[in-house]
Image (tube, rainbow, N blue to C red; front, side, top):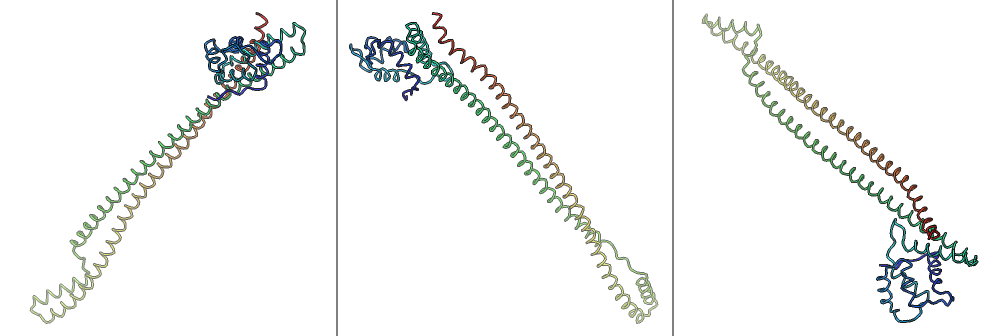
Length: 332
């Protein structure tokens, strides 16, 4: 534990206390008075004795101020935080007694010096306690801010996870529709091809007339003429068959294209719904984020307002208590 560092005012106060046990101004006090002096500045009897033994000043001897200050530093605990420092309160009490003693004896210059030390030491302790209060309040605000940051991080992580899951499911729906479309298209094409293959050709009247004459000539045993007419009819049938095949191919392409367009429209509708729903999620995320941040700002504002009121009341109480620490001496 590092030894406490005393201010000039505290050292002056300690010199004033030391002087109470050095009425002749020799700069030294008896080791026999050391225990009583240490107890006056806030050390318990056992702690004072242990300190005297540790520094080996138990034998009848004298102790100068430097040695006394060394003992005080070794025996004082760390700063007491927001609570009044018992050591400082004891300094104030002893200095007030010393001031009154000098005033009573007519030693006004020394009384004024003690008064100045009292004021400086009181202000120093007041500032120390105020600083401790402010440090605690800053820590409170930092804790709240850390909690808010963690909350906002969790909020974003939760939304990121939700949107990632939404995107994953959307890809599954798109893949399922794409696979279903591929299966349905293949089935549609097979069915359409089968229907067109089974559909008999629709011959022209001219071809039907040539076939009628062909068969009539054959029945009349006019085979030579029937053969000539058959060649004409076969040539015309071949021409019309090719024309029908071309027309069937065009019809197949048109119906296939229409079916594909229907599937594409269905897929686009799905993509549009997915995109619209995702935008709704993003809009909700932005809205929730603004609400969360505003709520956190409100919490911080309420905390700061509460701390401001607390500081005002606490600082007044600190000032009051420090004033009472010296005014109570007069009542004794």
